[in-house]
Length: 455
Ligand code: PMP
Image: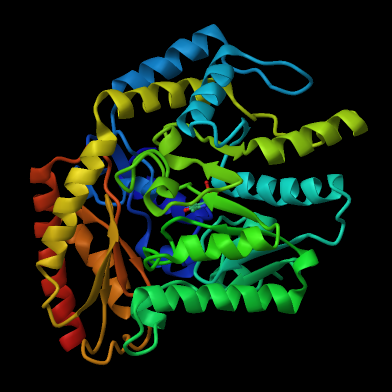
């Protein structure tokens, strides 16, 4: 490509971007990111940004980690590709499966590998159906997810996702997928309702939905321990305990989608540990390789695993899998990445720097535009509102969030605007000084937003 201008116009002409306003893109062109180091990325004009979202909630060990480059290179030379169908295996996939199972301390028995979180959740849907067919319960197939959930974009996982933009014009959700209320206390609790009472009400609502659908037709409940892409929504106190009790009563599997919360994001190894979730199935991706390679994993409890195994024995094979399931380079990178997370104490760092991030953000809570500061560990959401007293959102919804997203670039900061919630999810290697610098850049952004919405 002969010049920046050329590459930008070629991008507009030839590249259909995901999650992008394609028409607007023709006018603005791309922001081309050229390289990264630590928590920073640099665009093709050399401008530096703090990657306050770790890419897409995923680059745990930061950018430019040479140990991952070396792990990939070594594996590329040794065995660049092999598959795992029909009893074949290789050492990195064996070691990674064992490592993941060990992390769960006996709660999970096996790991099945895919290339993305979406494929992993499609795999979950198929395994839930397969499990119930194997148990002779052909009617027990419905899966309950939540409004504002994010589980991906393939046909089944987009159905689990509870966002209108992922359903509208795509003929989704599938009829077997149902949605229950989003557990966002600030937005959905009744006046004066405690977190505990709100959680009880949501569990009662789930029970009512199960009764309405028929308990014999409901197979599973899926949730992110803390909701990420839907707006950084932490569950109210006692929520997961109450939801799980309802599921257990009706023999409904509990699935924890840990694609964002896995491997230390919330200050413990898994989000399930933070909230006392005892899942039957767990889903991992993103931070498993710091997204240096595409990889996801579905972990099955001994109970689910045995039923699936038995049925594959009866019918002759487990009829599911991808060309790149357990890809050797991706699994080798995952092993090295998880080793770095442990060796450098990044889970503890997420707890410590997360506490600092929340302290710094809560110090802004009196700001007239800030309705709520929420999250835990190294994930935070700052919801901007038009009227603090009444929690009235902006009109149109997302006006302030979209402006904040754009304007933050001017101050050397990459964040996410989810409607009017500004999301932070920096690499787990961030230092206290870098947390403070990130918040300083956000304050400058907030000043711009204040001028903009006041105008
Ligand atoms: N589950 C969760 C909780 C996610 O946050 C995401 C991605 N943001 C996915 C699933 C889908 O992952 P992918 O984009 O790799 O398909």
